[in-house]
View 1 (cartoon, each protein chain N blue to C red):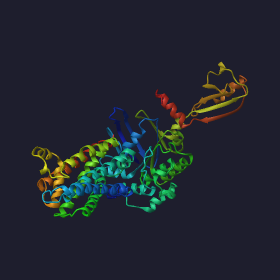
View 2 (cartoon, helix red, strand yellow):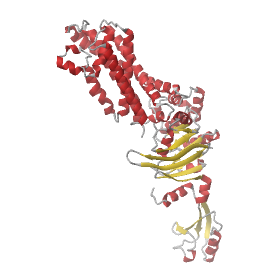
View 3 (cartoon, each protein chain N blue to C red):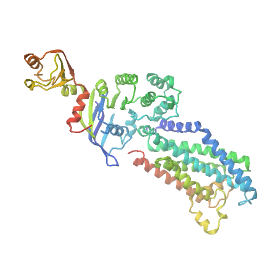
Length: 255
Length: 310
């Protein structure tokens, strides 16, 4: 037995069942939140805004909004998924089971990424009700959606293992990821920033993700698509390396 | 044939606590092994290392011929664990959580087997109940069902009957016997010495991270077992007569009872000569009984002999 497929499937199904049990919280809340963004930014303010790079403002913010949900939901799903068993103690069963660390990661991160990717598509569908949408590169769009879901789920998994309390669980998403996302061009093009700030913004890794995702919709972004992809894959590789290290050393999992 | 071989196992926690100081232990296939020890002696640490929950500082563990580190898949597939704490998924149903455990341990779904396990543990009627709605005893049964779901050959029961009612304890003992008949090796830790006395083939006593003794239960009870003779006197004695100083005697119940501890294996137990001396001294008794010391007495004397307080 070189791969415990039954084990991976058991964890994956368990995590998906958790989402279905809390369907309201998992799907409806983010959809409502996103709809509110469209009402406020798209309709109320957007009407007074000019087009950005030839795209109507309401449509311009769609990729950024999807990214915003993708980041927070991926992190939330994956970090909660692994933190909760640690908190209740049921992690003993995972630790004593014949599953490798890679299998545990595949199962938890796979489930979290599935949920947030599905949510991303639901938000895209919701957006279509409010603004006329176009997706120039649909396959690239789906690819980015999945890759970013997986990457941020990995990131969330790391936070879940690292966190020693529910406060710490919320700390990074609230204080780092959300600000970086808002400042990363979810609602504007960084070309709209003054020269100095534009340079600062380029140090924000989220800029590359949002820009790349926006490119798949409208064929243009703040940075070249190649750089965006490289940045996304780079972040993915870093998260993967950290997770593997955590399991290898038993960091915060095993004493 | 050994099913678990533990060699040179030590564990020092980050806090500096030395939980295990070089433990060597071999468990034979099909036996019931009881690990006795006071709280904090290292019982749970030892079990947790074998099950893969805690990393050992040094030493090796071979389970059913597989190194628990290098060949963890093969080793862990054979092992089931019922931990001490009642840790369950509150929102899952009984059936779902037990089915989950079987999958987690790499076994293909087997609804008939899960049904049988749940029926054996009187959980079948509760299969669709959420775990959080169950009583503590029922949750304990769920944890046992989870541990049995992948048909382990080696079962660890960490304090299985702590805080459990009489009925469940009886069911559990019946279940352990049934598993043993099937050839499952069972290692249980307990404070309840009667449990070890009732169930175990061999007993290990662990104290401050050291296995101070491993012995066949019957041999242990024979070797360390003392008998006590109690005489109910007709007239209470105010003090022990000097003539009886040759025996290990004690006056109990306000001088109404005379207690004599003796080694039942000795050639000369001292009982006949004591009774003759009592007659000579004209100390009459209405009744007498002798009692074999229990594992509990043995355990307490072992722990105290070591100069430790429990």
